[in-house]
Image 1 (tube, rainbow, N blue to C red):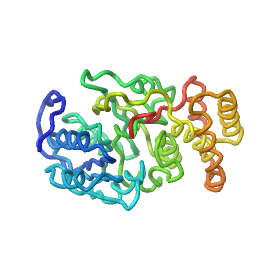
Image 2: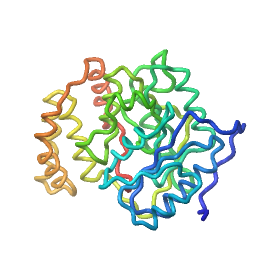
Image 3: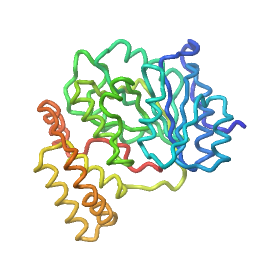
Length: 314
């Protein structure tokens, strides 16, 4: 069955299939959205291999995904893996590069070929963050402006704008770099999990850049949540405990505790989540190299947190 989606403009040139990029899609209980995403991926001139990780949908949804011509492989973990489903998909990929989509996002024609060309040409490049257009009207995601305004200096051996954050459903990774960095961290599970991976890639001297010539589409379900969810707030603080200096982590925890004491919506569950996971975070704590910490402090001084996936519907 084919499901309607807003068509993208055709690329300036259609070069046919490109076997360098696999698309990893994570989904959970959203059959219409995931089938729409698969329709869009099937229409790409690159004809990418698509790995779908289902985090607990019913059997009928999985059967529909399995029958879809775009789905090269369906993985069904025994439990909800959250963002870690992307790690599973990358391990199963057999291409040098992997693009991430959620069940409500996809790539525009030519973007995957362009990403592969950039990764081929820049061997230190570990992750490309794309420009994201949201909704049927293709509005600019606010994160685009945040990424484009990154204060980090340009690097002559990297394309785009160096960043330490990205949107999880709109990026392309070098498979070897992603696996060497450990992928998405199990302690965070889901919600604002991107910054930690950006830190770890940069710590291993892999470039992380925003490249607006790559475009992803995001079509969230109506009535999506707004603001930062407790999971995102929890993970922002846990990321600091895992990688940043102790005063930075303590300060963020104190601010969250003050918000919880003042009855700010979502602050109390976020603080409970931090305190529950704090022993594990301390046990896995690993300070960033000086040059990455310096970059993180530049972003801290910009008046906004490092960009993350935010509170997109899961």
